[in-house]
Every structure is written in C-alpha cells, then in structure tokens.
Image (cartoon, rainbow, N blue to C red; front, side):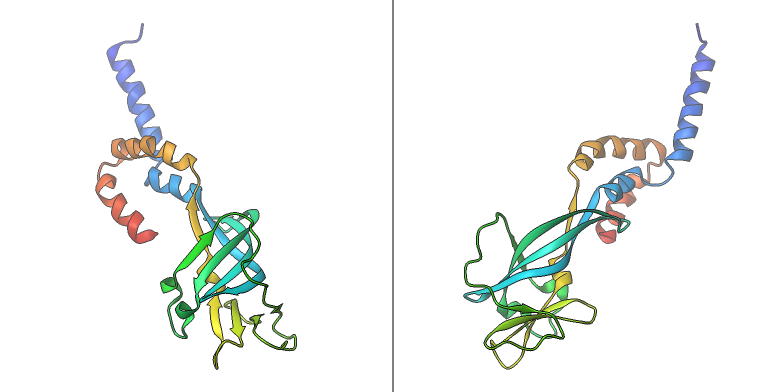
Length: 189
C-alpha cells in the first residue's frame, strides 16, 4: 500500500505535468479549437424583395487557423438602405434565412467583373479584393454589399460541454486566469 508521502508526490507530479502541458488558458484553447467561420466564396443568386437585397451565397467553413473543413450554401437578407457608401462593414445588419425556399422575386443577373452590363437592374461581382457585390440600376450609385459582411462566426456545440472542465483546470493551474480570461475572450473575439 502506498504511503501518504508517495501519493502526495504522485499528485504533485501529475499537477506539474498538467501545468507544463496545459500552460496558458485551456478554456481559450477549447474555444479556439471549436471556433468556425462561414466565409462567402461565391454569390450564386441575388434578387430584390421590396427594400431588401436577398443573396444566395456558396460558403466555405474554416477553422480558427483558416483550414477549410466544409462547404455550404447560405441565404442572407440586407436592407438596401444599409448599403450606403462609406458605411462600415461591421455596421451592416444582415439577417440570415433558413431553408431552401425559392427566391421571393425573379433573380437579378449576377455578372462577372469583365462581362458587359445587361439591361435593367443587375448585380456585378467585383474583380478586386475586397470582394463585393455591386447592384446597379436602382439609383445613380451602385449599392455595394461587401461579401465579408456575410461571414458568420460560430462555435461547435461540443465546446460548451467541455468548458466547465476547462475552466476548472484553468482555476486549478493558474487561478488568476479566472479573472483575466473573460476580459481576453471578450476583447479577443
């Protein structure tokens, strides 16, 4: 039977090994591993629905390290009034829609940058970064939808199940992280 000193020494060794292997904020590493971004790759359709622009976009899902892990299609609705020139990208309200229902109105022609302009309202994909969809024929100026506006950030569901354990490990190894982690997570995201 192991003595009390041997057990204490074993626990100390486990604690030291954990501290060396898990240095830093484990809860932050869990969130980094679980973070996914759905990045727009190509606009496949666009239409006007009243005062809104509705777009269908092919997307690529990437990890926090920009490694592609999936593809999909999403549909978003943006008020035309929000596409005013000079408005910051992060101030444009986007409503993502579920389902694969048909577009509410006939689609606008979506033409590449070098293609000739069709008659009537149409949408043109920009040729230069940052990627944008320019909608012509509504007024004197084109409405500009920067595609970065359509990027969605999510966390994988398993992260929330692991977080209580990760926070407990952080509290045991580096207690000040409990005070600092919320600040870093809020400012870092």
